Amino acid sequence: MTTESRQRKAAPTWLHEDEPPSPDWAEQVRALAAERDAVILAHNYQLPAIQDVAHHVGDSLALSRIAATVPHREIMFCGVHFMAETAKILSPDKRVLIPDAAAGCSLADTITADQLRAWKAEHPGAVVVAYINTTAEVKAESDVCCTSSNAADVVAAVPADTPILFLPDRHLGAHVSRVTGRQMHLWPGQCHVHEEIGGEVLAQAIADDPSADVLVHPECACATSALEMAASGAIPAEKIRIVSTSGMVDEARRAGTSRVLVATEVGMLHQLRRVNADVRFDPVDPWAVCPYMKMITPTKLLTALREGRDEVHVDPEVAARARGAVERMIALGSTTQGSTSQGSTTQGPGTPGAPGPGAG
Ligand code: 13P
Ligand code: SF4
Image: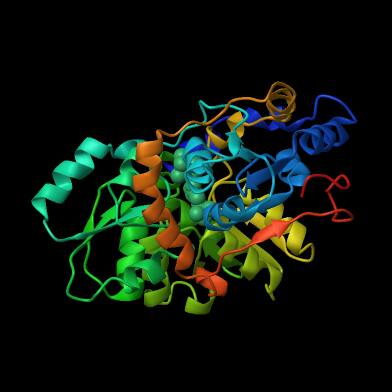
């Protein structure tokens, strides 16, 4: 889709879904969570109301770490299915719930376990590095997982002479190759939301305001053109950062400019605006909306807590094989900051937008 046709497109219709069904919705959610001994985790792309009511908000890596250590009986995962599955893999004895089990991921759907087995057979001896945006079956066939926060650390930890199969995101793979200097075999997958944020869209946004800083998620199709623009001098190199969603939060905290353009899913803007109210954060593409993330609505969250659903199940044998890859990911790249950092916004009593004490 061209820049012009995206600009003509009607505004996203999901915005009304953010409206809580009643004024005391947040109190009800927190009370039900406490009753169930459930912790509510929310990804950075969730609707603002969901982020505000959650006990923890973060990127895939931070939420995986929290899921692995929380003492609660239940985890209510407000994100997409592979994230809830990862929590179940790490905490097989807990009940893991998601407000809508149909919340999938177009990127995770680009590779199946059968396809991975066939790819491995073509490259015997290669190490398989799987982005966390994969099904449990694909993780079970992988050696180590990674997220956009720690992908470079994970790849750098693979012995230099060992071939690497990196899957499924080709843009993240290309970015990690550049950062680490490692040649890798890349699976040709992409996320349909980030694929739309191409070089043309980014160039237009920069041309409209050359003074703004720019944050780009490595899943974006424009990640390569962003670096090319910096290399050609079209934009000063220090104005562009290619970072994970938590890396964006770190950058927002220390932003010393008046405006920042953000190339990723629009849910991210909520946390950025929350951590730095002095800066204006605008989306590079206001229609970059993940339809799966937006399937988790305030009404569905309340119903899910009332009814104890949708429970996420992972075959125990598959989970046992996947656990090694996920645990290796959690152990790696844990202390880095900035563009490779991980983190979560832990919301406790008194935090703006957090409605009082609960299970967290
Ligand atoms: P993060 O790993 O940065 O949280 O991103 C997950 C994701 O699904 C991006 O589209
Ligand atoms: Fe998957 Fe893309 Fe949605 Fe992330 S934004 S959950 S990669 S479909």
